[in-house]
Length: 236
Image 1 (cartoon, rainbow, N blue to C red):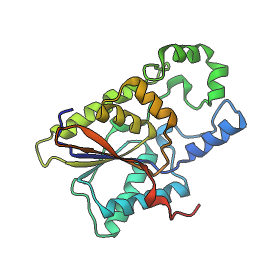
Image 2: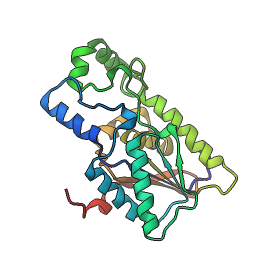
Image 3: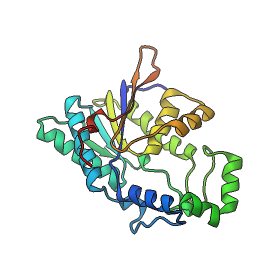
C-alpha cells in the first residue's frame, strides 16, 4: 500500500467488564451474556485500568507521532489513561489523541450478547450461513463481516498516510482484537485463508502491543506480535 506511514502499532484495550461477563457466560453454557450497557459503553475493569497505565509506560519509552483510539469506551479510556501516564513522565505525543469510529469493534447485529451456545440455539440458520460463507465474508443481520471492518481500517490508513500537514510517520491505534487481524490483512497483504488460520492460533491479550515496520521497498513486516513485556509486573 502507498503510505507515508513508516511504523504502525496496535494496542488492544485493557480488560473490560464485558470480557469478564463473556468468559463467565461461555464457561457456564449460558445463551446470553449478562451485560447491561451497549457494547460501545462497556467500561474497563480495575485490571484493565492497570493494563492501560502499563501501556502508558510503554508509550513514554518510545512515543509515536499520533495515537488513534476507537470510539468505544474501553478503548478510548485505555488511550486516555495511557497518555496521562506518559504525560506524568514528561512525554507528550506530538499529534495527540484522535478518536475515530473506523477502528471500533465489529458490530454483531442480531448476534450481539449471545454466546456460541446461544447462537447455535437461537440462530441455527445463521450459523449454517456462516459455515457456508466463511468467517471473513459472513455478515450477521444488522452487523458486519470481517471484510467490512477491513474496509474501514483500510480507509483510515490511507487517510493517515496521505495527510500533507505534519504527516504522522509512527501511529499507534488503541482498539480491539478484530483490529489486529484487519491490520494484518491490509499491511501484510495476507490471503483470507492465511488470515483466518492465523486468527485461530493467535491470542491477543488485553493491553498487548502488535506492530509493523515498513522496509525500503514499502512493504510492512510484523515486528511485535502481541507483546506483553510491559504488563509482566502487573498484579492480579
